[in-house]
Image 1: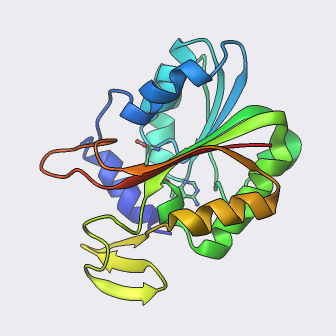
Image 2 (image 1 turned 90 degrees about the horizontal axis):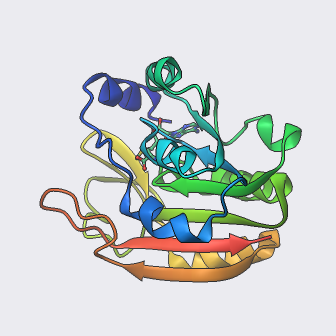
Length: 204
Ligand SMILES: C[S@@+](CC[C@H](N)C(=O)[O-])C[C@H]1O[C@@H](n2cnc3c(N)ncnc32)[C@H](O)[C@@H]1O
């Protein structure tokens, strides 16, 4: 969904290159030498950071131009063009961590359900799924054209805002144990915006 939007976005090279605050805050949870699978890595800023910090990183995104550029520069990270809803890697590999930042709001609720089942399947026992996503309390919630429950098209861009209790319940139903759950602003201020976000860490 919105693939062309992202391809055009990465062509303009406007995305920040420094690691996200979420990646910085999660770093101490992540053990060096373990494997991390990033879903929707974009320009790779968090994967590069995790790779530099001793994790074995596999990262996928649908935006071919972003991945091609990353593959020319970073040999120590496995960057692949792939769909994080349907990726075969979930069945072929196992990981210590699955990392999803600002990606769940790009997909529908039923696709999210697939992602959770897939992530659970590919995680090792005690492995963790780390999520940061826009919450239903976001100030831009409700702007634009409503296309479904918590789903809006605003400025030509689809977003599905995520309800904290619903997310927790879905993760628990999938089999995960929630070990961290926060909803707040101050997590990712950018220009004049400070969105309310959800941060969840769920363990297999
Ligand atoms: C808001 S960006 C976040 C990028 C990165 N995680 C970050 O925090 O900077 C969302 C990314 O998810 C990717 N994406 C959305 N749906 C996808 C899908 N089904 N499969 C693979 N990538 C997808 C987009 O191409 C885009 O790069």
